[in-house]
Image 1 (spheres, helix red, strand yellow):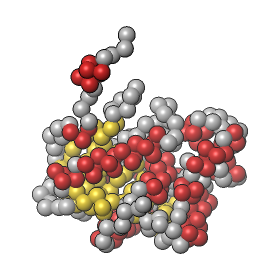
Image 2: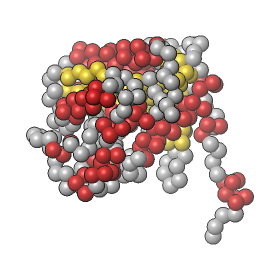
Image 3: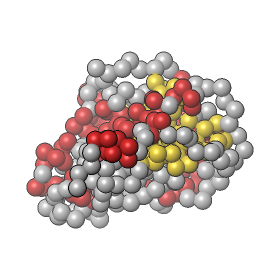
Amino acid sequence: MPLTPELAAFLAPPPPARLPLPPAAHPVAGVRLLRGVPYAVRTGVRPLELDLWLPDGSPGPLPVVVYLHGGGWRAGTRTEMGPRFRGRRPDPFARLARAGFAVASVDYRLSGEARYPAQLDDATAAVAWLDARAGELGLDTRRTVAWGESAGGHLAALLALTAPVSGCVVWYGPTDLTTLPDQSGPGAYDAADPTTREAQLIGAAIADAPALARAASPVTHVTADAPPFLVLHGTDDTLIPLAQGEQLAATLRAAGAAVDFRAVRGADHGWAGLPDEEVERCFAASVDFARARTAAQPPPARP
């Protein structure tokens, strides 16, 4: 039996921008953590949440890092910055907060829940939620850097190319779904296979839906207005080949956009095989990039 408009309005959950914030935890000295903050409500799926890490006692307004986790778009968790950072103390998100950033680590719908562009829509909604609550949280969302690893790097790149952000950090992310199947070696796969991670993202084998695959590829969205990028990719990546990072960097340069591409020698996917001190250099370079990008004047809004 259909709901009356009055009953539907009564039963509808309040918009996340008006929900009370959860009480803050203090996981390490100098850092506040608002864990599990709902930022969007989608019909038929769980409420989407983010964790917001903040420096304690900072007067603000704070620059923002929007972090998107990896996991092949079908797994992963917002609670960690990739497999090499599991169990690290202090947590890398806490370290970013101590460095003066607000860090929003964002859940998004996985490919078993929704097809692309749902994942990009969710990342965009998270940015809108941060904008709506910037005043009470002490955020300067005009100074936002998107950052992600693996599948999250793919989404961070898409977010940076479709929203007015100050910069983007991509760790070993896929950047062109139409050329990824053409790679040779251990990471190669059949473009006609509907069970690959990329096929599950778009809902069809890459060979059967090239237009969808192009639309879901960051390289397709590159223009001269793209913000500066930092792209880090392992030379020995057997899951997402180094050529994917190189292709994004080449496309950005060809468009006249700024990009710093760094091939990380000896690193497999997720920084596997990389000494701890080299993983730390990747993290430090990314923090330095985010600091430099958010220290500048906010970028003009895109039309």
